[in-house]
Length: 125
Image (cartoon, rainbow, N blue to C red):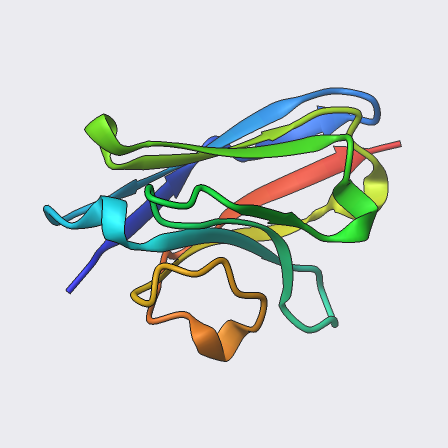
């Protein structure tokens, strides 16, 4: 069982930056692929970025955030980060951290075994 707790959301102006953090419980964090999803009001939850288990560290970014967002992980701290720069109003959403026991950086919500409670990000124009 893995518990995930996100933090770092808030209100920011367009062009600004935020760093989201997700702390995981358990001693096998390095074996999990970790991802960030987001869900805007009235829309489906979508993948933002994913990072594979420590042995691969492969990453994936959805097209709309490439060059602006960076996903990283610190296994010593059981933490995954999402650095978000050049934020746009369309980035406004609830951001969720998720863990996948296969260790592969997959893209679909149903691939992920564990979810955090979400953190709100609001970007004003």
